[in-house]
Every structure is written in C-alpha cells, then in structure tokens.
Length: 159
Picture 1 (cartoon, rainbow, N blue to C red):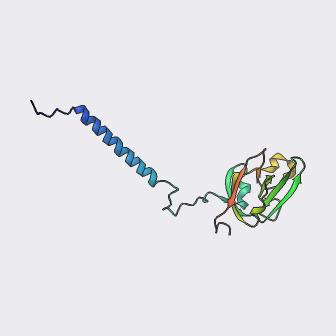
Picture 2 (picture 1 turned 135 degrees about the vertical axis):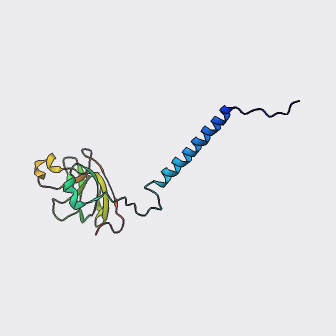
C-alpha cells in the first residue's frame, strides 16, 4: 500500500484565500462602523441639541421641521367650539406674537416653568388665516397640521 498524501488542488488554495480576504474585510468594516458611530458613549463632544434653535429664532424657520429650545413661561387653555375640544397653548414669551405650542385636547400644564426641547414643524398661521397677520410661527398638534414631540431639556440649555 502506498502511504502517499493526496495532492491539494490549486483551487483549494484559491478558495481558502478568498475566505480569508472576506473575513478580514468583514472584520475591518465592522470595526470602522463601530468607531465612527456618533452615539458612542466615550465621545463627550457630540451634542444632540447642536442643531436646535431658540424660540426667538422660530420666525426665521417658518415651514421647517426643527428642534426648538426654550422655557415655557405660562400655559393657558380655552374651549374651542369649532372642534369641541380644549385648546391648550404654551407661551415662550409674554406677547401674543411670540412662539407658541398649541394642542387640542392634550394638556400642556405639566410643562409650565420648564425648559423644554420641542421637535416639529413650524406653522405660519398668517398664511392660514389673515387674522393672525404679524404672528410668529407655532407648533400645533391637531389632525390638520403636524405633530410635535416635547420633552424636558437637560440642565443648562435654557439660560
């Protein structure tokens, strides 16, 4: 009997080489993806509120979907006969033409005197109704306009 070892085909070496290259490529790309993630805990320089604007700047961003930062000075509500619901308004300034957040049916009481971050689309009310001429944009939560998301801002965002 012949104890000779069978010869390895050149095709086998090529397949092994391709598998190694693919494995190295996968490991390298996976490592790059993890190191470039903006949500990494070890990168303290990333600020998720960097693109946010102050409530005073909302008049320059009418119709845009933005992030707004500000302190809600007072919350008011009234009953709207047209839609048969309570209309809540959160005011960021003392005048009626300052930025407002409005919601039908959803209480905004919990946000009074708090610094908040709001994401949503700014609505120019003057384009919808001439009675609102010279009014600042607002974010509105209703079936006729875009919704907004509101949450308390981290300490130090409102001066």
